[in-house]
Amino acid sequence: MADPHVCQRCALLGPTCCCLEPGSEQGCFPLSETERDRILEALPGEAGAFAREANGPAFVANMKALFPGEEELVARLFPERGFHMRLAVDGRGRCRLLGPRGCVLPREARPHYCRLFPLWPVGRSIQVFAAERCLAWREGRGMRRLLVLLDTTEKSVRELHGRLRLAWGLPPERGLPGAQPPTQAGEKQ
Image (cartoon, rainbow, N blue to C red):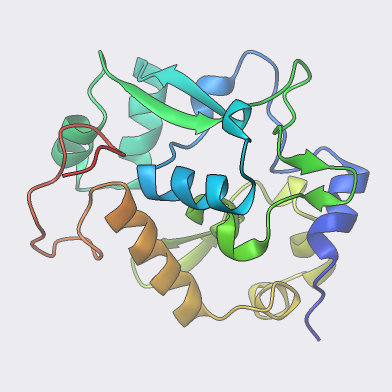
């Protein structure tokens, strides 16, 4: 049975996917303009929820690792001397949109990466990232149960991943031709 409160319960336990080690903000995923606009539509006046981050070597390497075989395109989208937008965190590394009962954003307004976590399509399989930080993974004890707890399916994960790819300037599926990507992730064409 799906558990719509598993992420809220996880947030109360901490640490969660919504927390970074202070000083490791460069590892935080980027936001596209579309995601930023969706957040501002859901929470008007929350411009302080975003931070501009340099595309440092560690960030670019992480992005390339997320998209194996697409390193050249990723390097164009996230040039090392460029910048990207990310969610802001407080001095303890907690996302500014993390409230005492979990994320303050409605699910449909959350960034794609947040909605995907801890899942990530790799080839024909779905992988789990940072399982030790995910209460749903610990309680589910396997992929099938995890998907049920998160009220999703492998198909939905792949569709959301495709939307994330498009938002960040990649074609919806690896290897598919797409429109000319923007020069930096999140820029409007």
